[in-house]
Length: 310
Image (tube, rainbow, N blue to C red; front, side, top):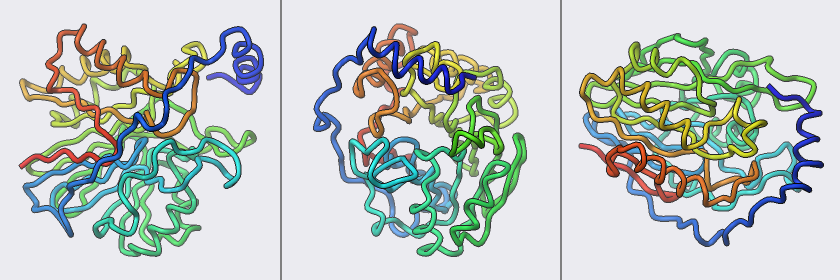
């Protein structure tokens, strides 16, 4: 982990020596019409729709699940400053299907948004919230009624699906004085027909193999590919595309011959680090091809795009 002095070194000294490479025009990120099922998909159907960043709408086992819901314009404690969205949320909030459950990975502003939590709690009061240790209080203060905290490897059934809280390598805290008082995690979601690994926000870590062995095999692995430069600062908390390839190799060990599709997340929505905003998907495709993996097993979605399996 790097502290505040390292952050100052990065932002005030290194950026003068190595200016950021230019970003593209935000118009390169296309927003397409989502194709999820209203109000719910059949239990044997599966859809996954990218809202942006690590926010997904997942339809699995007849349920509608949100991951890290974030509908605000800025990932910040204030509305006038902080990272601003490059692309609006690709699913209009008022057009969401009935939400049955919400999975939270940790408490950073780009993953846990106060206004969004309040909106979901008001619109869908019966929704079940799944949070890592220490995060439930934040959610309950915003009127969420049914909140469960989980430690790594805790498993629970919800309807016809099984949800497991799994390790990630990251950190937590919404202010400088309160770091790592709450947990961070990923989640696995399994129905009778589909199994998904949502890695949350993470660096490469030694538990991918165990996640595959204990919770796999998976049909989809949602892995973060962006916010990775400079590596000396970000390598301990965020994966880059090369790390994703190594994570996939570990996950492969638990697949037992089953096809695994990687879905890219954590890019193209908020400007958080130094790499150009359009570099992560380009680099991901390059290293995927160099690793000899099948092109059709990598899904880099457009904002709003829906994957469907049935």
